[in-house]
Image (cartoon, rainbow, N blue to C red):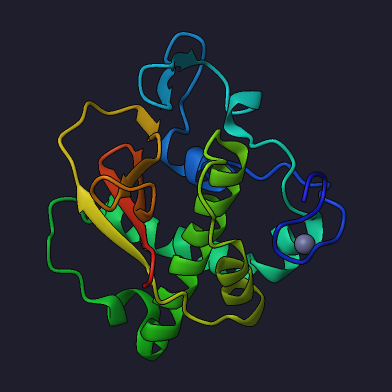
Length: 205
Ligand SMILES: [Zn+2]
């Protein structure tokens, strides 16, 4: 697995962004040493003030290949960009008409949003210290490779009241069946300014 792309199995040569660079550029265009953003990754472990979008802190270690990261998942990345831009421009509006963002194609585009988040979720999971449970790598890879739904993975978007200039990529929260080491779910969230995205995978029995 090491040094191999978790999606297609080729050599992993691409350092995926934890949060897309274009999103960072749109949401935090005036970032500088004087106007930094606050970056929290993995709970209390690291809290960083970052003065440049070029910071290495925004990258995962290499877990995927450039073909999967660019060509294959570009429609997914674009759908996510589009949704996030719309949500940032319509703050506080809790009823979003997806057809206004994506047109008639909205169901497919929302699947693409989910597949983008699945890429981020699994890449971070594989870079984490969660090695003690079986990870649904095949299920995620097949969804991403074939543009198919990952049925046990769910996403949710919410507006938050956090201070602005705040980015969070949370720790993973793993739940187990009571008194066993059988995993039930893996949960994580990301916050980009006023938007929080929850992601959860449920194990199937
Ligand atoms: Zn690949």
